Image (cartoon, rainbow, N blue to C red; front, side, top):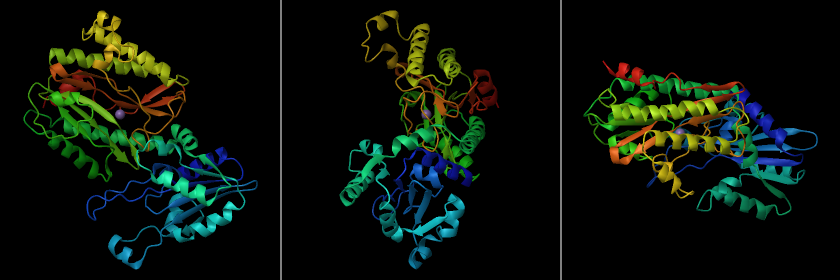
Length: 419
Ligand SMILES: [Mn+2]
């Protein structure tokens, strides 16, 4: 991965103007109640540029007329911390992971950055992320601090630049996402054989985490959704504590985190192993939308055009299976079209270091992007929620479905469950 991090920094340097500095901070540790610490999650931009996963890390990229220079600051462990936490990265290890030659301890950051600031006029920090948060974020605090301390500098937002870079996946990133999809496939195939009436949703969840952890993956990519029967119509159902009923469907929205990259997959199975006629109709409709969407996706298509095409496709399908009528469409509020009663979320999002990778959707589709395709139809009145989701790589000559091995055709699912 060291080559990826080096390459990513080179690409970022190319976008920075001369006489500027970009500073990327690690995320802070989050506390639960009392003195418990929540699982640490690194700033994904920092992972993207360095591969360093521990807190108290700062990356500083310096660019002037003559040189690009990289500085990484890490924490020096005290003897007590060493005793409690075990050994963290030392300078050599941080260098070996990131490929950055200039590694310092974080207590030297002030001195070194002040010196570098003498030669530049622009400082890049994260500004966009600030707007998304209700409270004053760490990014906002930092920006305020910097602006007070260095009033003569221009402050620019690093996010639009990094987001553009992160939109196009490098081969190492694609490899990681493919692996995540392959691991998810293996788990789905094992779990598929265990689904039956009267077991609990959390038993299914436990099977997945067992499959992921036993091969050394960190865990789920996001909170898993194991939603049977009416729960399948709750988009963010996470309780996973109901009993599976004979005749119902079960919707599984599950991904794994592999090497910091994610898969994001959804399948919907019949709990007793056989789809009813009605379930088949809805299922095939969702599958048809999914396949059609994959047929539409190509380089240069804008997300706006794509969404428009998908929405009319869904409208047609809902008419076809008589969930909505021509009259509903004629009388619909344009802000809340009739089809939204049964399909209320987006069809696709970018996928990468973040499950919802923070990429600007005004950038048209391009080779190297990885996005999900996830149509669904949710009929609350019938306790039927069906979503199918896969992850695709956009290529110049079409797409590659990275989740293609995961059972999706009705016959295949019924065969696999028939044991
Ligand atoms: Mn998704």
